[in-house]
Image (cartoon, rainbow, N blue to C red; front, side):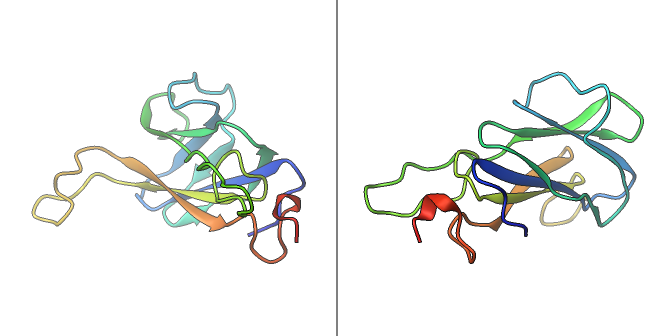
Length: 140
């Protein structure tokens, strides 16, 4: 994952659900969709390029390509508090953090995830702020 510039985080989307999707990067999971998707026409097992943006709240809202019907929304994880002398942990307020949001389909009947009744997003950390090379906030 790339090292974002000072004051930035990185975000990308991976479609692990099949079909073709659009992803809208917005401030909250309830925000209106953008007129033009941030990530468009992602097919099965396709990921977008990284979007580098300022630190702060961010969410992804997913819709089937070319539609405005949201199938999943989720905000990225917040940065936990950092104790004096500790390096910053990954999160939306920690410059140098890079995420991939994975879009999954609903669970299949009879499977271990059958209780998952709707498509969903899960955020994974691709880069912690103090990975090599470290972000400026790490003081290394």
